[in-house]
Image 1 (cartoon, rainbow, N blue to C red):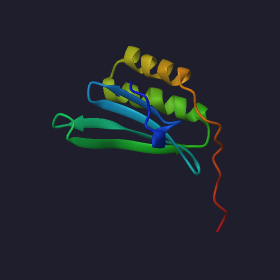
Image 2: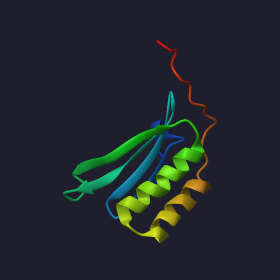
Image 3: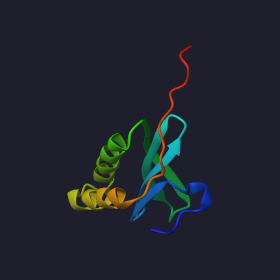
Image 4: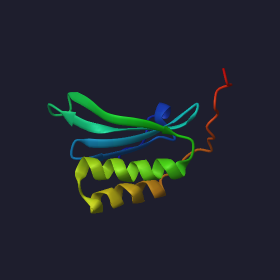
Length: 99
């Protein structure tokens, strides 16, 4: 894993043989995006995304997404371990005002 660019500070990015799971801070919490690359990385295919208010929910989604992408419990456990060692900024999701 490479050092994040300044705009990505606080983001978590996991790659494994053309598959990825990314976590980014957003206004309402944490955005998790997962998918894979095709055509030698020229095409990015997002297979899913979800927003969570807490890192506990994000951790579970990282594990589930890595397992779905790789079908390997060991690889999913490795992604979760990397997630556990990542330093995230203090960030609380703020819900918008009710309509």
